[in-house]
Image (tube, rainbow over all chains, first blue to last red):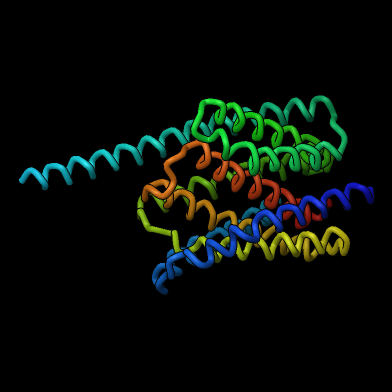
Length: 59
Length: 223
């Protein structure tokens, strides 16, 4: 239904407007991570991607 | 000596407060997940129309963004968390009914549910055991989320299945990042309000479940 698309789009725009100032503030105030910090994020994400691939094989 | 004793006492009190926030967060989170499972079951039983999802999600998000922060420090906040999670669970009903009607729909739903649980428990265990500080990821995650919302907005009108699949994968990656970020904030004392911590973690679980459902639905070849 077209009206549902319009309502969904309006909700997402509202969400962007709400999040934009918070995002700017978080970008300014976030501490910088070292390469080992980022590896601590990248490794579990790679594991999750492999896990999703495994789930797809099960469908 | 007296100063050392005071410092040790302060550290101990801080650790106890952190453990209390963590315990309360997981307790409230498990109760809200059960409650939203119940409301989802009611929604399926009532065969709610597809628009229920949109109305429930928008209503739930508006309450979570604008009403909940005002009551987060009072007992009313717990009631509002149940209201939001109940609404979001109720909104899942039509989606679950649609997937359940597919030939392997039951399998897809159970895999998405199990997959979501595994991702959440795995990431939580990872942060709790390593006790790493993921506060550096805040800006990155917010930018990622903004980009995903813009892509989702475009795809409402473009309706490209490959883009929808890509968005779902990226949402899972970002929400996984938020699990690491939120959990590390709790254990490092950055989040002291368990009501806000619960709603944050609930939303990550909710988004991972929906995205996983979409990925498995599309890749299952029956969507």
